[in-house]
Length: 166
Figure 1 (cartoon, rainbow, N blue to C red):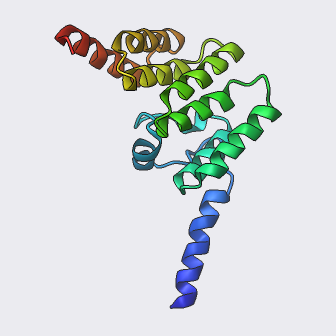
Figure 2 (cartoon, rainbow, N blue to C red; figure 1 turned 90 degrees about the vertical axis):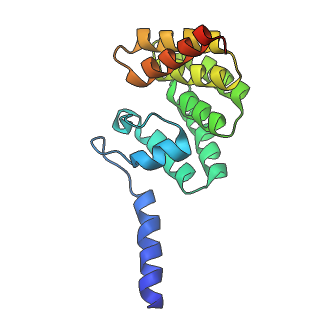
């Protein structure tokens, strides 16, 4: 029985360390929603492999390793916006909304038309109780990535709040 439990634990850890192919998503939708705050229907296969690996560290509560990997990725790929986007999402989860905005700004300097970056800026502004700024960011997300349903849903919600005087 002890060996079965140990083997189960080893196999569970192994699944988080095995690289994921571009076709498959490394995260279940339940986990994504609860621990990362990404939209439920987000296609993680569109993210770089390194981003998916960092999110796996986050899933298993190894936050320090996740942040370390983000910093390492930033050094390795200085022109890529994706390390900054991933860092922004992690800071958002830690309720460091201003830091999230700072990382998003750096990502946008690397590449301006990434809908997900504007989406996370909108989320941060919402958390900071700045609905007008959030609405503008969700509009930018929709401009950068047409048919980005999560941004449209958030925009609709924020606009309803603004109309309701909240």
